[in-house]
Amino acid sequence: MATPLVGTAIITGGNGSLGSEIAVAIAKTQPYVHLLLLARDIRSESVKQVRERVRLIGPRSFEVLKVDLANFNSVVSFAELTVERVHNKEIPPVTLLINSAAMSSYVSDHVTRDGHDPVYQTNCIAPFLLTVSLLEAFRAGDGTPNGGARVINIGCSAMSKGTLGYFEDPDSVNLQNGAALSAKEGNKRFGSSKLIMSAAMYALRRSLVLTGNFSLNIYTLDPGGMTGESHLTTATPLSVRMAHSTRTGLRPVLRVFSKSAMNRASVPAKVIARVAFQRDTVENWGRERYYILDSEYEAGSVIPALRDHQQMDALLGKLMRQIEIGVKGMGSPSSRISRLSS
Image (cartoon, rainbow, N blue to C red; front, side):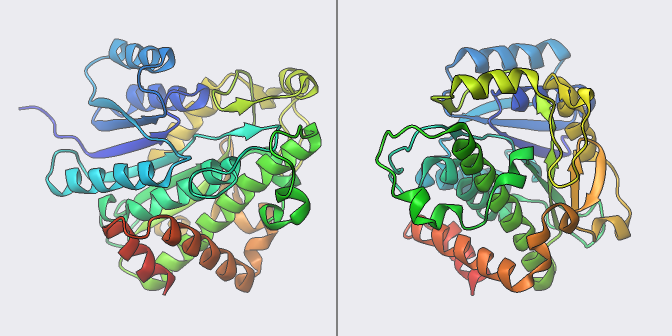
């Protein structure tokens, strides 16, 4: 008799340099987890490569689906389909969501069809929307460490350069379309999108804890500096490409200069796969954690804004309003968002 699958692990950017390595690491260590990778182009060579790598590991439950994080409709359609598949027992409940996909850009881009900066929507609003829209697909928790699901958001050192109000600053949003951005400004834009996403996710976790009877742990993991190219980087200045290939990764706030911080993507991927499935004590589960590779910190020591509860409530409300407007009229996820934001 075959061993039943124990859960579904969703990885955004599943064909990216980090996302694909995470998928391989999970496939090697968790043979009874259904791997569900998300990619913009499921016919790309990178998708073929990750399929082949997983296939060579051995028999695994594995699929890749098309999702465009720069399109709210694409995100919500996937979430609705996934909730339906879980309810119909086509796939096991979602026990893990890894928000790995990210976009960086060094030009002032046209807004998306949903009206947002594409870096902000891809890196921040879309993973937040995906998490909220998948709530009914996550395994219902019993309040114990192994009774719920986990969301791991991939952070970065650039968060230390970001600000929570970056995408509302007139100097940031009123640039002419196509205008080139300096390396400093492009990094601040990227870091801000990651900072806002991470802070809003911790605020969402607090909201779920307060409302009770839903066991979903959410935290951020900074993989450190990595070699390799992103599939979602546009118009990167030469200075940034050169710096990326030579500098060490810098820990946000907790700065540590270390040559070992520059790794191949497979190194942090193994850490992420281990953290994603490690057993927790009830005490540890209740803490807000931030990981830098496998070192664990209190989230508030890395993201000081988390200590300001009023600011976090306001940030959560803002993200809720943005995604509620984006999915208005799209069905059940909208009603879940309305309940959370009320």
